[in-house]
Amino acid sequence: MAAVTPSLRRSFLRLFAVQGSWNYDRMLGLGIGVAEEPLLRDLAARDGEAAYRAAVGRGAGFFNSHPYLAGLVVGATARAEHDHVAPERIERLRAALCGPLGSLGDRLVWAGWLPFLSALAVVGVALGAGWLAVVAFLVVYNVGHLWLRWWALRAGWEHGVRVAAALHAPGLQRAARLVAPAMAFAAGLAIPAGVAVLAGHVPAWSFVDLGGAAVAGFGVLWWRHSVFDGARLGLVAVLIALIVGAVVW
Amino acid sequence: MSIALCRVDDRLIHGQVVVGWGQPLHCGLIALVDDEVRRSEWEQDLYRMGVPSHIEVVFASVDEAVEQFAAWESDPRVAMMLMGDLDTARALCERCPSMRRLNIGGIHHRVGRTERLRYVYLSDGEVATLRAIAARGVTVTAQDVPTAPPVPLEDFT
Image (cartoon, rainbow over all chains, first blue to last red; front, side):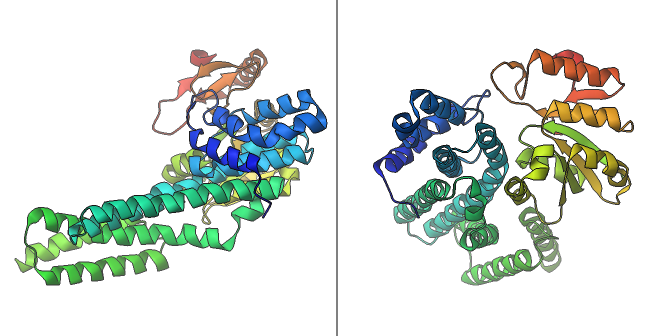
């Protein structure tokens, strides 16, 4: 990894405001430009004021992706500007990064890490952990969140236009595959656990049953992900539960 | 099957395309037509990353697309054709007479373009290109996602 410089740290802090000027013209673009600017400052001394201004302007053009991964494009384009990559090529890099960063971020965070930990926190509250579960959720979620932001910025800054290599990292790919079934597992525990708390007394054996169902669901999603998605599997499970319930009682 | 969607989108492959259109259309093949991307390994690598494994992505230059167009139309899978700019779209419309519909899915802000729709910004030259395409009998509409109503060309130029 490239050395951590004060300008990289400044860029990292500015990335927290990346959505601050979101608009339909440029979406995240202005925020990206503001976050990239510290990394471009030394271009002014090396290549002249005009080159610096042009690079900052390119950085602020239309862009959209997941906000936590926005650092990857900030780092990669800043590195490309330092490497004297042609402006057209930098614009093509920006265009090509919108899609993969958006879909990876959605899978990792909005459909993975966030609902996974929220569901675990609900389970924690249901088991009597109270505010501790809420605080633990906030701490653990943000450790992952901050790590992802920092990793993205450094990976981009390290790789420049060859940033696809960073996105192919086995750890990241494994995390993207694991997080969806893990989220489904946690949600499968959290919903009945939450219901149990709201409904008052529920016999202990039902938690064992529900845990078993959640583990089975995790397994089905893991092995047959091309056939089942989480929502479809959940609906089938609810249907089976209703039929069994109607027959037994 | 057929080519279910011919779309101009300057972001080419992203979530709106893969999830928004790909899922309801049951798309199995994406033909990405762009001379620059066809020549660039790292761009292809990035675009492929946003596509789930059950959808095949084919990268083609305009010339290759003209040759392949009939094959994509008769492919057993549902195909989507994506183009990044209007010059590519015009070249394909001129050279593939069976292309009867063109979807404008996203052309974003750049200096010299003005806002026509929230997701469509066009320069005057690009408006003329679109009118020339329509004059050939191609139905041009703007629609970012399938759940939004299509906007006819007259209403956004």
